[in-house]
Length: 319
Image 1 (cartoon, rainbow, N blue to C red):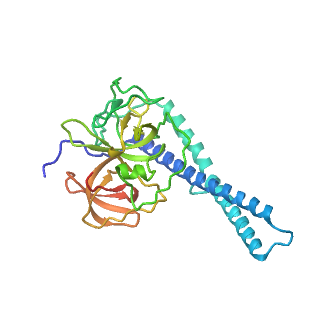
Image 2: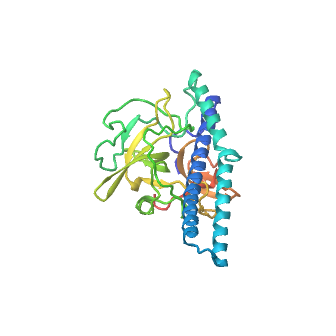
Image 3: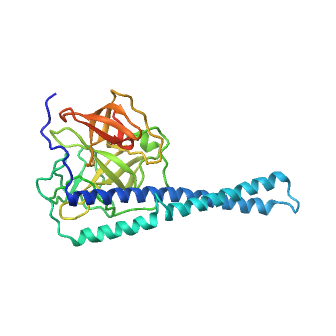
């Protein structure tokens, strides 16, 4: 197979490495807050059950009712302890991590940007705001720049803190499949929601489709169809928010949450995986199964084998 004329991932320089660290910390905080939300929802249910049970108990309740009440109280205590651990103890320690992330962002914003133009990632330059040509656009969503306005800019996809302009309150969706689900089936399963991480197929004329990691920032409905605004979490070289794309479920693959049940890919299987130290996905072949991920041989990468965390190894099928 002829090698494609595209740059490959390169070692991150100091500024890009810092941005990568910030992005990883942001993702960890978001995932811990999702766990906290799920915990709080359950705590509310348990509290209501306790009140209802106590209000219906006779003066001399049967032993079965007392056992049920005791079990509810114990569960409530465990939920309270878990909430304390998420907020105040390692490895989550959300309160401390938010403070650290705030300090990192403040420091990076006050330092001059000195990123070499020779430090390139695997993906080509992209316009700041661009509508997906493969799907019909019903018009700009509230709070999203008009896609007809083209702003020149480029992005080195090393990873940074996602900049989300429109983050709505949304129920926490727990991955129930063995993998990140794809297209309309994932949409029906409720896996595409505001804040979700997805792989987005960036289709360009006369070029092979490229999959990039994005966050869903808003969802609009027109009849029985849904449209998604997905945002590149990577700011451009001028520090402006990442590019926004309008698309449909057909161009998305859900990236599983860290606590989801993940797929197992056998050696020799072709997958879609995130290239290390970038936020771009490419086809690869599984060469070795590891404890928390896979060793992969990416296509057109001179036979190099690289390790990728299991969460970012997706089932490619016909995508």
